[in-house]
Length: 502
Image 1 (tube, one colour):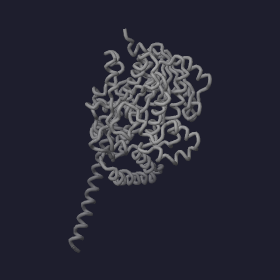
Image 2 (tube, helix red, strand yellow; image 1 turned 45 degrees about the vertical axis):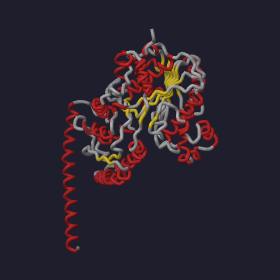
Image 3 (tube, one colour; image 1 turned 30 degrees about the horizontal axis):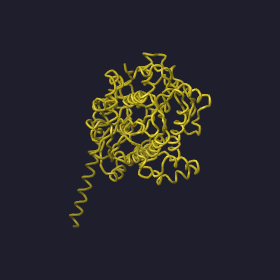
């Protein structure tokens, strides 16, 4: 009888980089909750004033692990931290730990990356590209390796607008081998100064460095049992382990967060365009299923054979338009209002980048100065102008993705699901065609209020938010009425002057 996904992971030893990231933690949680994995080695980078053990211990309080720890209180004891840093020439892994990994690891998941779009080129290449090469070298030392999964991005080849499940070395001005050699010769300052030339048609250093990483895979993987996972834009969980779980602000989550607070009132995008969102739990499920399928072959891959690529993106038959995303985001403002909102949540949408830049002054910058003046008068530190400056920098960074749409080939996802048992399809669900976007965004907005804004889901808190929303709504429309009256008065006065001297 063929081994299913759950049985495959029984007693396996897994090594995961990017363990503290958004997707990394969800993968660990799912492995511990839905499989009998023997051990997980998690590469963790020390942070400011926090060693790796402290960072790991904080997971005990993370809502992501609540369901797991209720059913398996000792589950996190199967996770062991490995000190490492992708910025280091040796990955920051000690000789002892390297020997340990080489002797025990059967499943290698490489998910560590910097996802900042405006990262300096030399840092993006070091973390996303060079580290991938070093990870492959480490994998080749592993005596019992059954599968290596490289987590890439559906946008790693985004100069193309119809992206197939293949590699695109032709998009690079210079291949990864030459770029990595160049970084060893020239300094960081010189690399960054050549950024626009090297990045070429890519919109930012993130997608460029991820494309280089895929080129590394193509050139350096050899006969490793390897596959590439390309998720689209990863957002809050759909159902697992809890509805709407999220832990950071980036991309579409930033927009939702800013709109809910009444801070962001203007957004620019192609009104005919479609989004490319995928829930984080679907990503974890497909990643684990991809590894299962890669390991099933059981034989070394021919070095000249292209590693399989698994893409997770919205189904062609169930696309979410940009306009629908805005409608769904605004539809629950009265159901899950935020107590900390500073203005009534409303949104004006424009479909021209230049128009967004012009109107942003009136919708954001000018009100920002007004809010800061009020803050100064009451003895508080002004912050809104600086906040809007940061918002506009971030909007500029993602503008390419707001005004363009991509079509992703996802044959691998369909084929993978067809190879899974009915039980596995339910337990490791990533069916984007069956995803109900309305239900999803209701849970995502609830999750944003709970996990990011940190406001309790109590009736008292919700009622307090609704009262605040009602007050701000009255204030908003009163202000708009005064503004219209002043505008009308000025126009009428101007018309009288023109008629008098015309």
